[in-house]
Image 1 (spheres, rainbow, N blue to C red):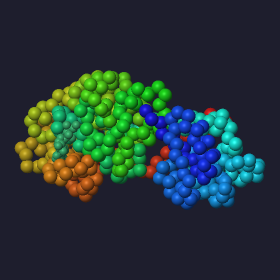
Image 2: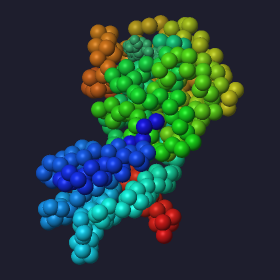
Image 3: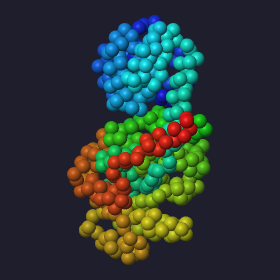
Image 4: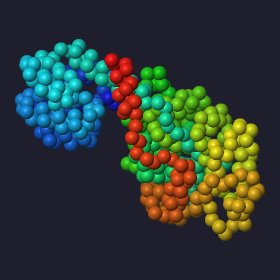
Length: 398
Ligand SMILES: Nc1ncnc2c1ncn2[C@@H]1O[C@H](COP(=O)(O)OP(=O)(O)O)[C@@H](O)[C@H]1O
Ligand SMILES: [Mg+2]
């Protein structure tokens, strides 16, 4: 998997810029960009790209560069500024440090020193990420048969979660052979679950997170392998590892499973905090619902873990939710209405989750209600890992 540790070199001097390029491009896992624009324009680039390191040549306009450094360190404390200058005297180094620089790279450049400073930042970033305790909650969606709306509901729930809360949300498509959740968001992914598995040993969690495609709603996506035949390379144990890993970097992990009780699905269901079992109000589907619930009982899952969701619900049928509850002796957790077919097709074909295309329609408000009933914590996470990270860093770095 491509690493995306981003370094932005801000340097007007052609010779020193190319010197940095020659050295830095040899460090694996780095995305290197260069800027020679005016510093106020560079600020906009920084805002957008949020590099991990800015290598800033203080010369020729030292005062302006120091102000720039101060502004960046005030507004983006996580970005590490490496100041650099030719034949710098100690007073400039001190001023640079006061303006927020974390390192001072003296020119002519000492190659080893630069590489070691950058690698140290990459290591810190790894530790920082690992310092965050596993906190993510896994919601798995499963249909009692194909076509009941598992993917639709999972995609819309993820989109609505992102709309309502500033949280890290990922939709994991575990229809490993024919999964198409990405199409609901019209996003393409270069990486699949298989890439994550292949790189599991030395995976940098922060880099993984940034490598996964992000929809404009904020939802990230982990897709199945590109080719159908690759699906069988993925085993239940892999999925267990992936979910454990995602719990470290995401607040909510929405999983769309397939509707077969194989090893992998059982593992996912076991690992899930809650299972949303999708069903509909017709006799064959009710029959399957009963069978699934019987198995869940045998697996020891209780009614807090398995939540029954009736999709495409409308009132004028012979069987309503109450009748179904009596039939199967299980409470219905949520009903989701049948939505307008044309609008639905429009949303699906355009790759826009329905809840984003029509946030005020009845369907969307029911998805919102589902989130409320799940008691999802939508509050701003004040202790979002940063304080813990700081404490952890202090501990390991002394
Ligand atoms: N509440 C709903 N109202 C109308 N159509 C729906 C609803 N939920 C899902 N659908 C449609 O039903 C079809 C199957 O849904 P999908 O989510 O792919 O099912 P599954 O993932 O369970 O196989 C899709 O065409 C989808 O747009
Ligand atoms: Mg599906």
